[in-house]
Image (tube, rainbow, N blue to C red):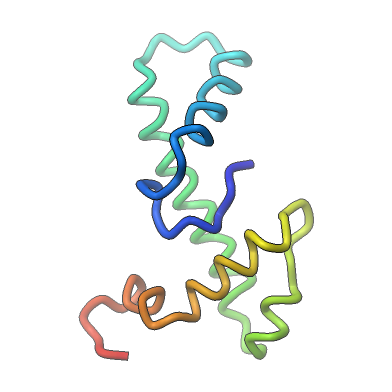
Length: 101
């Protein structure tokens, strides 16, 4: 699983993207470009991150509880980095870009 603690797909290290690409190519015989696969991976990564945020972050609990509520199979520091970002002024701006929170 790709880490969720990066602000955007563009901040994800190429080494992570290339490893994911290698895993896909190992399992599937695809007749599309590597760039296309990486673009699709980026979309899936954003969708997955959004789902985690909706299901686990938006609950009406304290920040401390959200930090402790690490998802099964996820590294604690990745979850906590994502929660802290979503709780930050910059993270809230990504959700509500036209408001001044």
